[in-house]
Image (cartoon, rainbow, N blue to C red):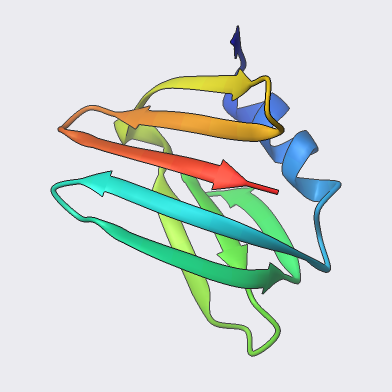
Length: 89
């Protein structure tokens, strides 16, 4: 595991624009979302994923406590509550 910053995360995710990714939310909210990322932005303290229909998933940067790049080409994000998000490519 390698600890990374939000800016590093944005750069990694930009490599996966127009590709399929999976979001695995675990904790207070548990769900899996699979979609093709058309655009990723980091503005106004939110990391935002846009799909091909311009729908968005927003993550509040202030609630992110730790971001780790895992060995299996995935990212683990730990939030300030009992919530985690794993991004698989």
